[in-house]
Length: 417
Image: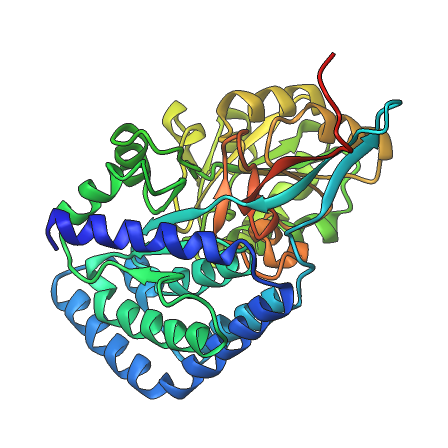
């Protein structure tokens, strides 16, 4: 894809975004429904094409984690469809009056939510991002340019073309959803230069990809860096609940960004809980690495190094540290954490409130699994990713996070005095 093609694609998206901004909620919801229907009609081709790309990835020696992210089976496909239908049911994020007032002179002033415009999504491995991104962008009235990884190129094109057909059938602009159809970095580099047409970039993938995108463009970037997620077991944590939450947070899906990576356990419950936790974690094939105090209670686990506290493993590995109270736990999280997702297990409302107020993370969970912070479990219908930024969006990036606002003023011949 040469520079001219990328330029035309960006220009087409800008025109489509202008049309999308004035579409009704019912039309966008109809488009999402038609997109889901259209995807259903190409399910066989999608699964067949994806199986071929998975086979090539295996032959090329790709990791098991990447293969898992790349694979679409019946369950994953059904999940992708359900996300489109769920986001259609989400309240309209557009044209909401966020605040307003009438001045003493009768001038009416308010601000309302509007789309961001054109959003570029650059991502690796996961074909489900293709449908999630398109769904969230259409719901929020934004045009989207998709650029997936080369390992899933044909799968992504099939998915995108089906959704384009559904959106057009509902009366949306033809270029509301677009996809870059060639592999390689050249097209991405050109996309990064399109700041005249693209309003926001959202990279989904490893830290190196996100850093390259953020440093290579003048376009605002919503970033998702490391998911170094913590769970702190306070001294009053209910043992059964604590074990269930640790196992779910770590073992339910080890390769995702909101999986537990570091377990903090209060010194006053460590002796009771650590042996139980070890049994449960080892039975789930989790390698344990502990601080010196943890190793005294669990002498046959690996020692944790300074690097472990900084690590997002995305693998069946868990680091464990014994801490002296909630203040030390909070200090550890704020020093080593990535601002993604952190939780506490406690029966104390006072400790829960202290943790909530003092932990500087996008998602703070009390007596709940870190795996819930993906956005769908927050009732957002579907999300594009989880931002570790503080501006513009923080945490799960759903339809509301892909809006901005404009000021609107109604007068009756009012003049500046």
